[in-house]
Image (cartoon, chains in turn yellow, orange):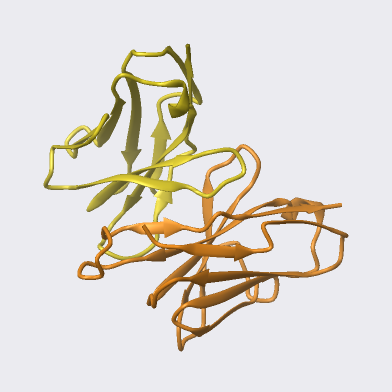
Length: 112
Length: 118
């Protein structure tokens, strides 16, 4: 079955630095890879989607890369702020519509 | 983004009772999903609910324990039956939006229902 691993359970960085989160997967060939933000006790909030034929996507301070050969996605937050502190989830899906497979998430803390 | 609401937002229940969670979406959608997120864990899909057909359950989840209704294209309910402390979790509904709907083609989540079973 598919397996999704996010680099670490927790990442602590200083404000202003770039946070880089990793998502690796095996036994799967996703057509789409998505990143969500989740705050404690709340539902995930969609951030970015990248397709298998896209290498990179940007949205404001966020950047996602997708390497289908390495089976890896990198999620970057530049000029990080304390308000970026949350858990970030990587999710895969094999088609346009349908279920998502989630990683366990990386808890990011940005300290002043 | 989609407006998805869930009721209740949280509840504390006694062992052996049942709780029905409601999910309302601000526009018509074909596919709705119910996920569970246990403490410290990632999201696990319980079932997919399409309007006009029986829900499709994932391995480890059964209709008797988690009956689902999908009476129309904007609403669904999930019931957690005969609850035990192991059912303490956040329950989330989500919907897919396809291209041409004015929203990005992805899955959006409700705010979740936090359930504690004593």
